[in-house]
Image 1 (cartoon, helix red, strand yellow):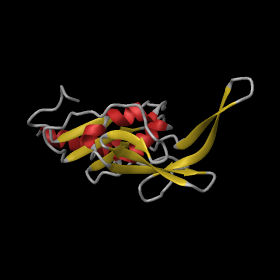
Image 2: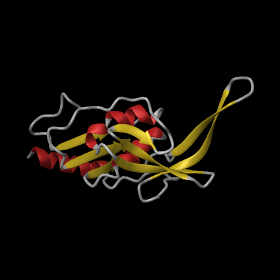
Image 3: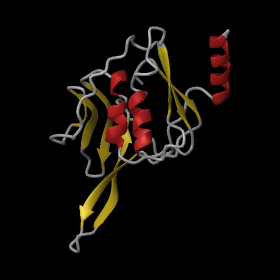
Image 4: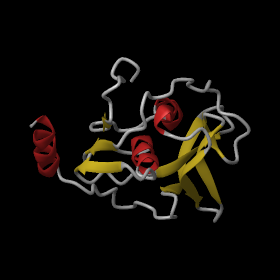
Length: 172
């Protein structure tokens, strides 16, 4: 991000395509320059009925019920606030990558581009068993800041073809 940021950087493209997930926290932290230091980006709707929020607190990726997530804040600030951020998504975007799409879509200047995501925006909780092994179960769903969940995937607001035309127009 630092190497691409310059005086002319007004638009950004974030490519989440083929990202099937993993740990959302380092991915979210890597995108911290696009967010306010204290900003709610989405929610976890748990099967117990409780709702927790995720986002940033003091520049660190944060979940409202956790005491601490072990990441240092990224002290980098973009040279200019982006006019537009285009997030590329496809059907293989799943799980924590969907959390990124949900969080990014909370920003007013973000457009999701491409295909509907996989539909696995879930909360997974590890449980330690008596033999020391770990069982990970889905215990909830992710939602945007308006409480909308995405059981059938996150739909883009722009097709790849429309985006290609837009990019072509930028070049002219």
